[in-house]
Length: 330
Image (cartoon, rainbow, N blue to C red; front, side, top):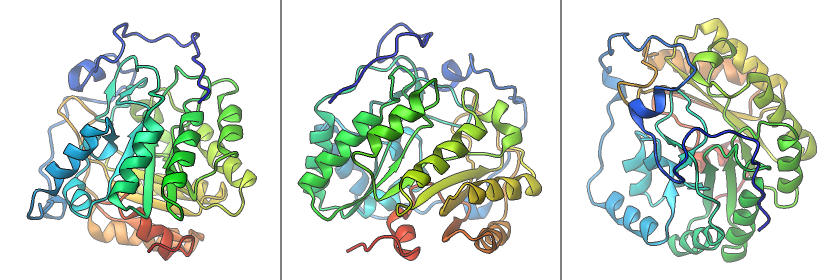
């Protein structure tokens, strides 16, 4: 593995690996949202049923034994019991500390530890042991690495495919923002491309300053389009959240932008506030509104649109890719 560190990126936290969560994380966020907005009561369609059994504890034990992390846990996903109950998970590589402070995200901020050179092998062994046929691999933002962690993604793809021939891999990447970083990342990933390339737009253009400080709307669109241009046969995918203050016209605008940048699949879900210190939920969109957005996206030409209150970027990712005709999942 060849990972170089970009020492020009200033990081405020000096204790390597230390986590900033909740109030500590958001306190230094450049976002300008109103934290005093009263918390809205969750509607009935947001409630999650917890299935019987102890699958969550069993899978967590296996993950800890192999020093692996899932975004399901770190991002407090509402679907964790359903997915873990089916023995599936979205694996989060490159540690559990992110270099950014997005106001919607529950993943910890801080100064990450260097990439674990053994992680690709541990990931491959765990996936093979679980007998998975479709896997999503994601990561925190690693602005401290010159390629944003792309070489580590490529190493994981190689190791997983070697241990599980025939497996289908979807990667959900950060934006690789920074001078020359996108070019380096795309070059590295071209040597070990996934079966599906996913990068989330997250929200509409107008809300980026309050929701994704440190990110750039047009940069994310460019990343998706450039990957597709280099790999026309590999489907691209993105996702957005609702409930952060966006309007219907702005959501339509984001969907149009994604489609005009050659994105094939899209997910649309309801934002849920992780803690009282994060960006508040300003509105709960109804199931009927999500259905209408699914129809709108289909008319735009997306191969598949997953739209619903509890939809997340990697939720039922295997079924979504299969329904769009891109992969055969055993």
